[in-house]
Image (cartoon, rainbow, N blue to C red; front, side, top):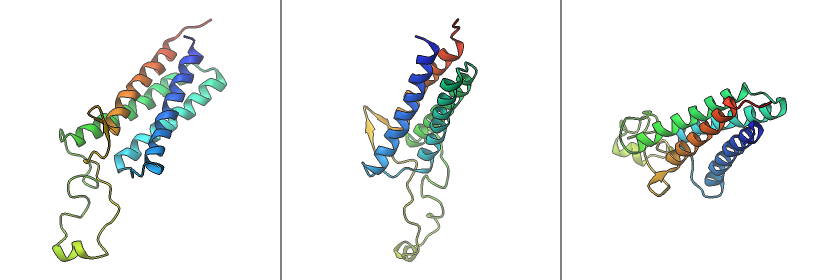
Length: 156
């Protein structure tokens, strides 16, 4: 495979994962948690890096694409571990949520109580035992391999 093909596949892979996340949110009705949103930013960066790398023919940019894919994979691994209870997650979106544990019974019935908090430690969708965060981690690791292959590819 040529370097251009590898960069194109990695860029399209991040675009597909990002579009999939938006489809789950806007078509499927699955609101993202805080960590789900964190996983989207590196994909957006990888897409921009990929477009720049393709336009400029820059081999060096592939290293940055690999870094972006590795960051989202790392966040996905961290998020999956939080979902599986292997380690604690951010207090603002796990367990009782930010400030929820201090609420009394009357407060929970109040319309002023926090609403719309999506918990990061709850799996809302899974396939073959992996949540969306798990699939993002796995597929992003594949993208890391594509980016690294492009970065190491000597052409010409």
